[in-house]
Amino acid sequence: MRALNVAAPWGLDAIKVVDLPDPKPGPGQVLVRMKAVSLNYRDLLMVNGMYGRGPASTTDVITPFSDGCGVVEAVGEGVTRFKAGDRVATLFFQGWVSGPPTLEKLVTALGFPIPGAGSELQTFTEEGLSKVPDFLTDHQVATLPCAALTAWRGLFVDARLEPGDTVVLQGTGGVSIFGLQFAHAAGLRTVITSSSDEKLERAKALGADHVVNYKTTPGWSGPVRAATNGRGADFIMEVGGGGTIQESMKAIKIGGHIAIIGVVAGAGEPFNPAALIGNSAKLQGLSVGSRDMFEAMGRMIDLRKISPVVDKVFPFTEAKAAFAAMAAGEHFGKIVLEF
Image (tube, rainbow, N blue to C red; front, side, top):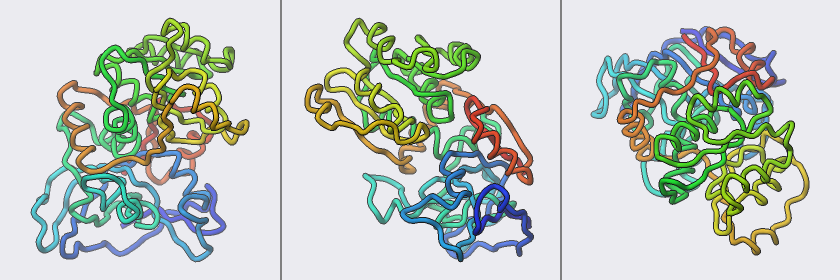
């Protein structure tokens, strides 16, 4: 079989397609023939040797990608959840089935330290896979494990939102577009930001109630306040990090919820935690979610027939070009590699 490998000195030029022996499933394992994987910002960091609880070492060899769709080829001894022919999605955390996060659960992420889905064949624990709605394409299924589940958890697990509440989605990457689709389906008022008027028009077509170009309106908290009659947003999907948190703090209502899920806008200005005291806002970091959350999300996707937005598709042998497109911010929604 062929697989994608990355090693020191890291970077896009270090992505290699290698030939490896076909794996066989051991007890409790499932052998999956991968059909597609999707890119996350985490994968770009990983390829550049920067992801994890510490920098990757010069001896690490990474098979990237946590998010994939495939078909079960064979199952190992004792497997009861799947059979050959089942179509499945990989789960970001192979060992987080239910309950709150713990260190033991969070160290089971695919890609690093566990070899990821970026190979034609891969084995996974049976607990680390889930069946998926039949109406979705393989490309669409591959977008769900990280971006979709992150948006789902932020909106409906960590925050207790009600129809009519206002949510702000930053940018038009995978998490924010899933957040827009889920929030619209749940009857929430949506505000989305982007530096591209073209992308904002596409967001309107997906149900965005208000749009703000943060390049022409860097103080986007103003339009959020205006859209809510001065009250502020109930929820903000914070993907920018230090570069956007100041505006998020200005835009959030008293007692509102800011979900910290990314740092794509860089360090930005120092954050003054005293601002939290004045408005009793809640900042919560989150990292994807459990299998129970994934399957609850799948039921809503199936019920509302929500179609994930796949913007660009590349052959898996052209992973370098796909990452370059991500780094340039060319995408709206998700980028997928197909096998």
